[in-house]
Image 1: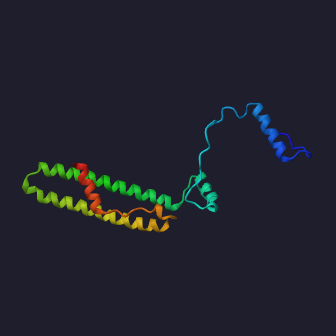
Image 2 (image 1 turned 60 degrees about the vertical axis):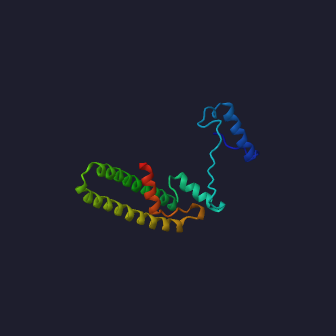
Image 3 (image 1 turned 45 degrees about the vertical axis):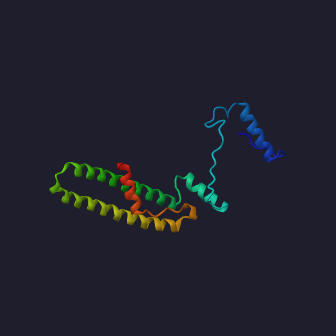
Length: 158
């Protein structure tokens, strides 16, 4: 690469080098050519924090509360899936077992419900802490209500 002549401005010299590269076809067939640049702005961050956010993102990291939110969502999804499998098993067993075995089956189902309720209590505690950390109330997660979870479970079976 040639050095910038002393009598030429940096702007003119850089433009000349770009023009030469274009003429040589060095910018042809670049990845994403003709596509708009992705909008990397985070609308929830103040302008003065945007650079720090971009550095975190470019290095493959994210803000701790974002990771915590993803962990909460995954934990809730796992708890719901497990309860759904157990509920389907319970219904199938209830239909096929004789009456004298139903008491033991109900005890097993109650144990599964208690485990689910304990997990939801732990998830709700994590949600409360998460809501204290997020920068905006619009990002808050709702507390999980057991009545709604059981209604959702029963509606899947209908």
